[in-house]
Amino acid sequence: MAGNPSPLLSAGILLLLSLFLPVRSSLLDGRVSHGARPRFSRLMRRPMSRRWPASGAGGLTRSRGCKKERRGISRRENSPFGVRANANEVGVEAKSNDQGKDAMALYRNLISCDEPTIRGSISKSLGILSQAFRVYGPRSVIISFNGGKDAVVGMHLARAALAKHCEDSGLNFEEQKLRVIYFLSQEREFPEVREFVENQVSKFNLDLITYETDFVSGLKECIEKEKHKRALETTEKDPFPMGFVLGTRKGDPNCGKQNHFEPSSDWMPAFMRINPILDWDYGQIWNFLLWANLEYPSLYDSGYTSLGGTHDTRPNPHLKKPDGTYFPAHYLSDWTLERAGRDLRRSSDMECDLQKVQPGFSSANARTVGLIVVGDEILKGRTPDTNSPYALVKFREACLQVKRVAVVPDQEDDIVEELRRQVSACDVVVTSGGLGPTHDDVTLYAVARALGQPMQRSRKMEDHIRKTKAERNGISVDEVSLTDGEQAMATLPLGSFLRKNPDKPQAWPILQCGRVFVLPGVPGFFEEKLDTICEHFLPKRRKTPLLRARLSVDELSIVSALNTAVDRYSRVSFGSYPLISGRKEGGVQTVVTAESENEAEVKEAMAYFIECLSNKSSVLSVDTYNRLHGESASSD
Image (cartoon, rainbow, N blue to C red):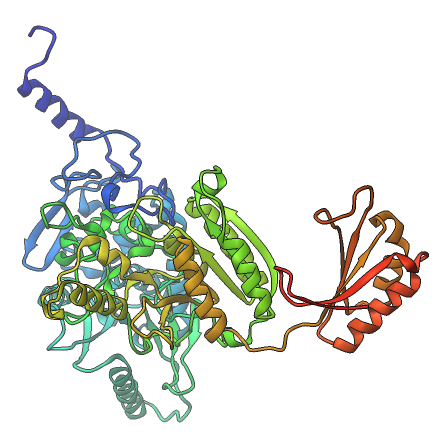
């Protein structure tokens, strides 16, 4: 017993460590990459710089931070980074009646931030907002403040930038006020979010404009009112500029290729979209909120990672604990899953222009194809790859040019790299394998990363799973509940869609993500899905004419003649290979092929090649060759 410390002493040591050593989440200090993808069984088992006593599956202990000051609002008691534990030092509490001084204190602390993961982003965002206030003026810049985490970051950055602008321009901060706009849906808004917005408006003396309508209608009404107000104040007839600060980030649904300053679409009133946090990622958002000790809606402490309305938002299933409760939002280590608790949007996000994953592309126009086979078991020789040979035959029958075939391990980074390479070079890419609920099934997450899309729950896939499960168990769809694994199956890259087999509409649908068809690796399932793709989703073209000449000489004997023909017929694809099977004892055979979309040119090129041979009697036969497994029509 003398060698073992008492439980009380051990608890005391752990308490002292938690108080005096900085706790850093690997997600927030940048050691977990944007693409790190956890499995359900090891969701929170993130790499840590030090091992700390943890609750649940791991990560930061929730007891060190989240304090609910009032219903619907959460904030951190202490900065988890050991940078500034006192919120007053950061300058966000605004306890003084002098809002201008508090906002300037915030600005000074932001520009002096020494947290490496957010320091550069803070400086860039403040610069963008400073330019917005300089060009449009404080009264013509309005902050979209819906109470979400991105809006909270944008609002406080704008407070700081406005304070600096007023100081440099000799303006009174109290008179200017920060203007914010809130689009409220009475039926669908979370009460926690509404209470949070009201609290922040009162606390920071914000000039709030509220519209109980959708974004577009409210924005149009706001601009019309501003125009009317301006007309009463001035005789100028020219349109006046207005800027709306949005919480748009790259990777958000339907954002397209927006810049930090983006004019509104033609069908919208004229205004400038200002995107100060466009380049921020999920980890930086939470890094900033926790470092600056900012308040945020308490829903984020209950597993919500992206907030919409009550009709389309649930806690993120990837944060669910074994006891049915959820980890806080900042525990999410795979940032592509940020919107996994949100239903896919059926219409465009009005804050952004609708952009599809691969705009203007249709698989029906494809001419080239690539194939990616995923599986450690193939690379290690435990399982033969039968999908590649089968796919090559089907692609040839579909008159598609195969540009690349790759076998990659069950590693997300390797799959992403190969996907990006093939998507940039091929019209269509087909993947095989890496689908399922186990730890090494990472293909879907790799597809999302490669295409720059977040993962989000698909209502159509969810409905299909429910229907299939109900039919299998002989129950109604309403009685079906989905397991965590089934919810994971319904979480797909944003912008993907399900394609049904027209001949078997009840069969499991085929997932298409832009140019990528994602297929299972089990040979029977793979072949069935690929047959459907080639039959129904790829173009119907006339088979490419191919002639095959069989010669009784080796390849060295035909080099000169073949090079001459290749130089003359540049649009014809020539090939040659030695024929091993079926050759006569002591003899040598070589096969030469010629292929082109122009049948007459193929015949002319082959005839020219034969004419160039020094030994024309070596030609044994010329075949019209259509299939890889030997269907041919012989001609002499």
